[in-house]
Image 1 (cartoon, rainbow, N blue to C red):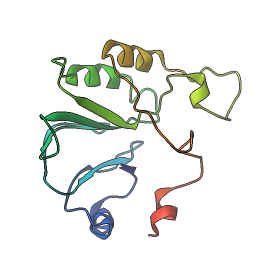
Image 2: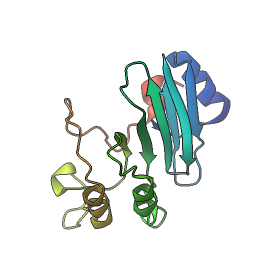
Image 3: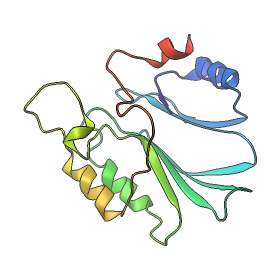
Length: 161
C-alpha cells in the first residue's frame, strides 16, 4: 500500500485497520511511503528495502513453498525511478520460485492503461516493458474498475484522518 502518511499517524491507522504485523518505508521527498501489512500465520522476512520498494520472502501454512513478494511505489518523477527497473530485475529469483510483484509502478505497459491527460504524449515506458518481458512477468487478472486511481483522490479522504 502506498501512502503519504508516516510516523505516529501511520501507526494509529494500521492499528485501526486491524493488522497484526506491518513493515513500512516512510514517505520521502517525491515518494510516498510503502506499507506492507499482514495477519495470520504468515511469516514475512524483509530482505531488501529501498525508498521505492520492499522485497520480502513470505511463508505460511497456506503456501506450498516460500514465495517472494515485492511491493512497489515507484517515484512519479522519471529521473528518480531511472534505475528502479534494473534494481527490481536483480531481485528476480529466476529459479522458478513464485514471485509476486505489485504496486504503483507509475509507468504504463500499454497506452490503453491510461485515460485522459495530455493527448499526443507517449506515456508507455519502454524500460518498464523491457523489465516485465525480461522477467517473464504475467499480469494477474483483475476484476473491478479498469482505472483504480484518479487525480484528486487522496487516502486521507478515504480513511478519515
